[in-house]
Amino acid sequence: MNGAQYIVNALHQQGVSQVFGYPGGAIMPVYDALYDGGIPHQLCRHEQGAAMAAIGYARASGQVGVCIATSGPGATNLITGLADALLDSVPVVAITGQVGRDFIGTDAFQEIDVLGLSLACTKHSFLVQDPAELGQVLAEAFRIAQEGRPGPVLVDVPKDIQMMAAEPTAPVHLVSQCPEPEAADLASARALLAQAGKPVLYVGGGVVLADAVDELRAFASQTGLPSVTTLKGIGTLDPHCPQFLGMLGMHGSKAANLAVQECDLLLVVGARFDDRVTGKLDTFAPHAKVIHLDIDAAELGKRRTPEVALAGDLKTLLPALAQPLTIADWQAHCAAMARDFAWDYAHPGDAIYAPALLRHLSDALPEQAVVTCDVGQHQMWVAQHMRFAHPSQHISSSGLGTMGFGLPAAVGAKLARPEDEVVLVSGDGSFMMNVQELGTLKRAQLPVKMVLLDNQRLGMVRQWQELFFDGRFSETLLTDNPDFVALAAAFGIAGETIHRKEEVAPAIARMLACPGAYLLHVAICPEENVWPLVPPGAANQQMLEAKA
Amino acid sequence: MKQHQFKILTQSRPEVMERVLRVVRHRGFALQGCQMESKSDSKQLQITLTVASERPAHLLFSQLDKLVDVTHVEARELAQAAAPQSLQIRA
Image 1 (cartoon, rainbow over the protein chains, first blue to last red):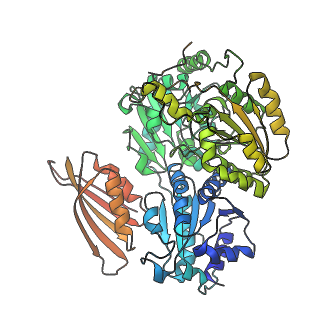
Image 2 (cartoon, rainbow over the protein chains, first blue to last red):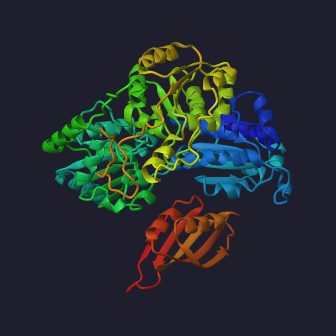
């Protein structure tokens, strides 16, 4: 057995059943080992696609996503994906080939200091210096990727180590540790919750990462707390629950933002007071005491000092805080806001109204369908208008906001969940950023459905130029877009273009009935904006809304 | 701007100083002094940093503490304080 075979064997021992990657010189021994089988490998058409497919796989399955690339440009192309995984706390292990140890530091062909590059975009990283380290390093990589707050880990392996003899070893599985809060802090949190007259539950992506969706729903049911979620928290709470007020923040629902601004206690669960959530920080939830629950102690007090901070596992913290509350008047007030400020899908004219299309799509999809998004206006419309039964069904680049994320993430999600419908919702700007992954859909014959909302603009930037830059539309006009349906056809993918409202329902039906991949290209109005919008530097109650 | 001294015990890895100093810079702390020495067993490093920032020390403390190679952090306020305040944690 050589080092490369050892790596493939170690991945197998870690339970890895799918990897994504792209071969090249310094990783050839690993690809030679993969040639013998053992772990299915999906060739993507760019290393960035491989990293984002690994993220999609991880987020759809709850397992570690694995991507493989060669040295130099192969590794640098992974970087955006690793940064995306870091900001969204996704467990990913990236394995990169490196030039042989004797060549490191000589500016050899395709040599770059990958360990140095990784420092800012991974949770941790390793450069393997000795073949005897391989087993321990790979086991550490998988432990670190999943432990506590998950994240990406990079393992850089020099080519000579891949080719050297390596002794087979027994599987190494390392045990993770979890912080436990003080009993007094738990008691303080319970007391604050019991005393609150207007409490709100603010839920983030940490809940699904902790596998605590059931515990959260039980907690929400027992307390009856009016609740809001972040972008990554979408799906953690039952969207049909009367106490659920929607997403908060810059493009949050009016009811969610007003409830948070009015509340006297904010119970923050697996969230981090992101600037897109808080607006102007010192105006956020101005009357509220804060109880903050998170596995990552570094998030406690980072942006807002809590009255009680509880670092620990949400699966145990939430049941420990659960109690019935006497907040009927507050519940009724929040429910009334949710009704009064419900989305309005009435829209004049024949042009397709994207929010209405997405609500129709949401209703037409099977309950277990997975939706991946790109970044921009369409991403916010998905968050506002589609409903998800579980957060693993809404895969959206939230922290980094990575355009080009959606298509490769859909590749990974479909390989993770082949029985479930996987739909990409993209925009014309984002779609072109990793359009080469249409080749991956074709290669793997993945029946991913794609809804491309095309306003021939970089829509979100255009919206901000309209609102905050005096209508100076600098480099956001995309009227020279390709013929997207013809582009899909070049990859053997069926598709159609629609322009009018009445075409929406039958086109979505045709797309979902198609046995293979499908591109539904939707022409929408270039001037359509995302509402509401909290302007930069404003408080969350100062939302701009659509003109009547 | 307050000055703080951080004493950091880490695993001895070739890149560990880069990791620590990157976090110091990125989290908004200006490096004003730095000492590093290998412990007698050569498996650990003792790093002592003096930093200054408008930001509270606990923000840097918690970010350093969660670095995988860091096993122990102590922080102490150096200037403009009536009495030294310290934070410490053992990983």
